[in-house]
Amino acid sequence: MTGDRSADLDARLASVLTREVHPAITGFAQGLARESGAAGHAAVLFYGSNLRTGSLDGVLDYYLLLPGPAEKGLWPRVSYREWQHEGETLRAKIAAMTLAKFAEACRGDTLDTTIWARFVQPCALVHAGSAGVETQVLDALGEAARTAARLAAACGPVSGTEEEFWRALFRATYRAELRVEKPGRENSILEANAAHFAGLLRAALTAQGIAVACEADGAIRPDLPPARRAAVLRWWNRRRRMGKPLNIARLLRAARTFDGAGRYVAWKVERHTGIHIPMTPWREAHPVLAAPGVIWQLWREGKLR
Image 1 (tube, helix red, strand yellow):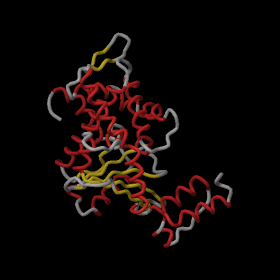
Image 2 (cartoon, helix red, strand yellow):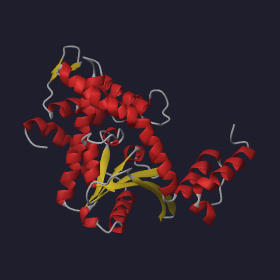
Image 3 (tube, rainbow, N blue to C red):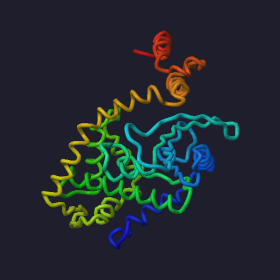
Image 4 (cartoon, one colour):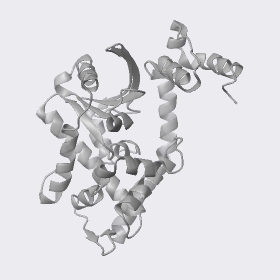
């Protein structure tokens, strides 16, 4: 991230170092880094609605970024943890992957459609093992902003407000993924994070040499030549076609490898239905095999239609 064109984007990215979070969130992140055995070379990002609200309720979302070469196959590896903090049970979902693969995904060099779209949104760097690791994470987040901005410019209007470009981006990524989102989800993201997104598109486009003209009515017009727009859309179409198959493959993998899946599902069921699902050792070890019994209990209690 060098050069005058990147100065605005660099300044924005620095906010991930100064965002205030609850001490319990930072403490857990540092514990994750220590448990990884590579605390001095790892980083932990905190993100999601709890970052905005400051609440400890629900599930706290972390990305644990580890040293080593970029992994092959499916990633990240997901786990669920519960711990006690001042008499309260806190819950966290942890996605773990190498920092090298995270950076690759942020650049848009993989078929993944999730990492750069997720981390163009607000996050906080709640642990960095060294100044070098911190720099690598900031560089990766800068690439996520550039990747997302390119696609927003390519699939958005020729001219429009920044919000219109971001809406076009999030609608495109939601359609490409296997996820259940209420209509207008992109609006709630932009409204909840208005200060974060204000000016971000211009900064991220300018940082990669794409000029942005400001029009009299407040709209902006990215200078994206037809050939470059076509190249970005070709890049996106390949990833769009692979979005749902990749999501399915990751769900199938998670069914076998999601550490703590049984406790996570039991908590979600009780939170949404009020029905307590006893977590036996067998259910903990075999969450997929245990699912029919849980579904039967919910149906019998009248919680499924």
